[in-house]
Amino acid sequence: MQPVWDPDAERLHGISLEQLIAHGRPPFEIARRTSDVLAGKELFSDSPVDDERWLRMIFGEASAEPTFTIGKLNASVLTAQLAAKLGWDSTCYEATKTDAARISPKTHRAAADARHWAVLWHLISTGPQHAHD
Image (tube, rainbow, N blue to C red; front, side, top):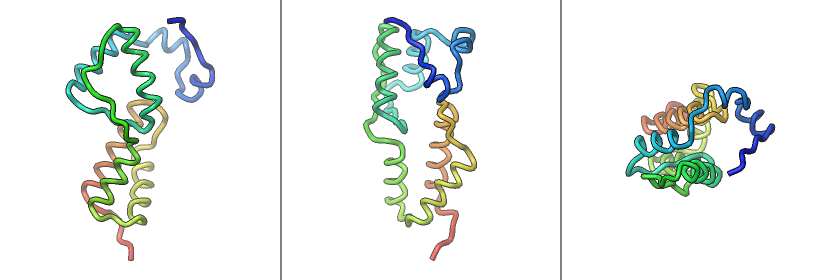
C-alpha cells in the first residue's frame, strides 16, 4: 500500500506526520491489540462506515483478520434507542447529550470520543438528571 498523507486529516485529527512517525505504532501491533481487547465482541462507533474502512486497511496491512465484529448502527442511534427504551422524553435526552458534551467533549480523537459515548451511555443508563414538565 502506498503511504498517503492528507493535510486535511492532519488538521481534523491534530496529528502531524512527524508525530505519527515518532509515536505511531505499526499496523500489526494495532491489529493485534485491537483484536485482543475486542475478541468476540461487537464494536460500535459514531462513524461506522468510515471506521470500518480504516480498520480494514489496518488489518489488511497487518495481514490479519479481526476477532470482533463491526456494528452497523451508529453510536448516536444506539444511545437514542436506549433513552427511548428507558422512557426518556426528548427534552431530557437533549439536555443529557449537552451534559455529556460538557463533561467529556468529542475531539475527533479515538480516546476522547469513546469516553464521550461512554459518559453519555452512563448518564442515560443511570436515569434522567433533568426534571422537565
